[in-house]
Image 1 (cartoon, rainbow, N blue to C red):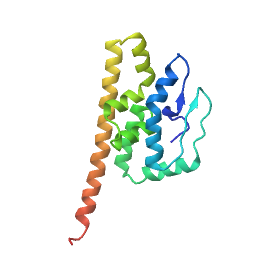
Image 2: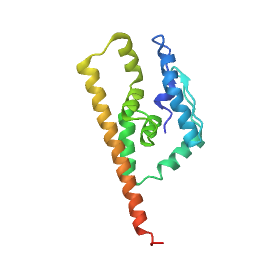
Image 3: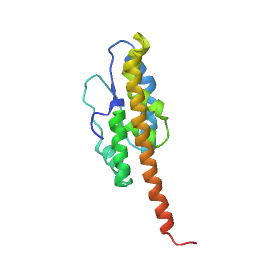
Image 4: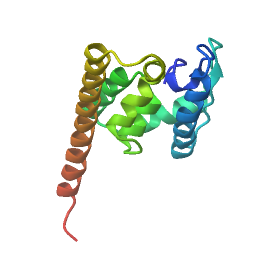
Length: 158
């Protein structure tokens, strides 16, 4: 987790965006901090965010519980959604694919709510991001389930 976590940065311009981000991202941050027992806060504008080293280590330890193939899927989810927090919420089934993509495109969604949708551009990008996020998440789940199934098969019957 780098210091550029998308859901931690709020912007006051255009007017109303900060309240929009806070209303939608704060519950996600709250879930994340409780789920992983970490500290993560938000900042306004381009102020640098200081993510505690303990938080980074905790998330690193969590990610290391996945096998190498599942980590590839997580990487693709993070690249599609531009956020470790949103990606882990999706992988942990806290949010749906549609919600995750909405959260990752929050500024764009805000602009669409003000100015309208450019169907050929906005819809194509949204659909592509949903497909990429869904595929990555499915891949993570399949790799993780295969690992659990193999582990169960290797245990002697009781």
